[in-house]
Image (cartoon, rainbow, N blue to C red; front, side, top):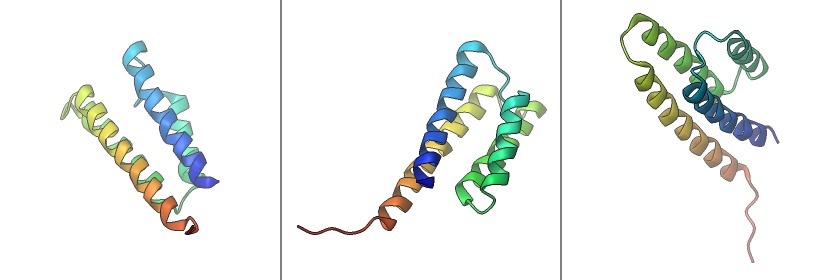
Length: 102
């Protein structure tokens, strides 16, 4: 159940990135998005994927703010890692699933 919620969460992140591109939302400085991430880390303090994505997000935002990378580069890096995280979570789920034989 928790992994399904996580998958939905990851999908919603992609929608956030899409909204950012179409509406020019400042993803790094949006108070609601920042609060959502703080809440997720608090809810799942032992989930390595959540922690990895939260740390990546903060690092990318810092690099964008410093002018070290462009917003587009940050978005590309984020999307690559988000996709990888979805695959990783799916692999975890398949290992936990019972093995059925016919």
